[in-house]
Image 1 (tube, rainbow, N blue to C red):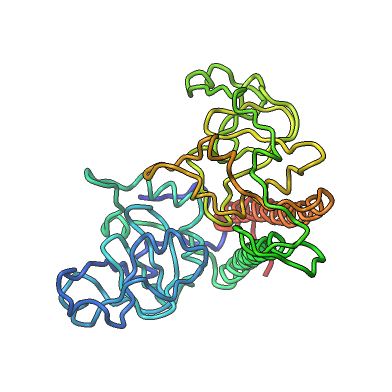
Image 2 (tube, rainbow, N blue to C red):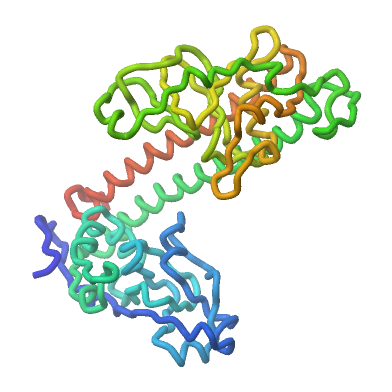
Length: 400
């Protein structure tokens, strides 16, 4: 028997997927025939399902016509079916809310009245089944779960009321995750809007002047970055992956965008701003810079900066650099680079030190809130994984 289960709870049944639904594949109409494209039938590809953070999918990037559907191996899939990716990323799932079709990278399930499509969604998304699908995939060009293999799949089906309760619990957790993600997105938009405002208007100013950077408060200056930072690039030492493997430890090893490893020694001790030299995103509102505090090592892909005491503030510099468009200071096309000579010439607005600290603290508070919500999502996802492992196998029964 394929996909047997170690434990079958009382009242639960092991069923072949064909007993609870119909397996339906997909196809692609001739891409050179304009008559087949631009219609009103949703046509999904695996990437649209893989990148989805929701239980449901409503609209496809491309649509096909009825003629395209009839002249290809694509099939019309009823709403509230389970779209299941069988190649590329194996095992991504979504529930379609309208009539749909898919390309050949799917083995979709049209459930019958004896099972909830939401239960199927969660059952197939649990790690147990995801791992089994990957092990059962085969192929020489690419791994794929075939239609015949999908039809052999067996599932554990609880009594109807119990399956409803399981779905409700898991869906509530998903709703909490999505609500938190929306909050994070709103905080990020708020941060972006405040950057635009605070780096042009400051705090409490009423008089402004036009500069090469645009409007700024009359009391502010425009200075070259070299006037307000110390640069410690000469102290950087790059280490190869092999060298780092021999030197594992507790000290962060930092690159262009973040910590990339941990080793047994450090080069810097204190609070510094690290700004990407290459491999960074240098446009407006990009995360080209980040703060490191404590003992750490830096390779040659990040500039090491520190605010000049009495003139500038590290956190003001951090957020200002991430706000400014640094692309005009970079060179190269394939992998752009911010050389130290150009770094020195970056023009920055400069409020009083007191105002710099206030502006930096505003953004620190927002970032702290975002980090707290990201940690919360991580905890909820861990909780969801644990719930799936016990609820979908019947190891923990829900109260009816």
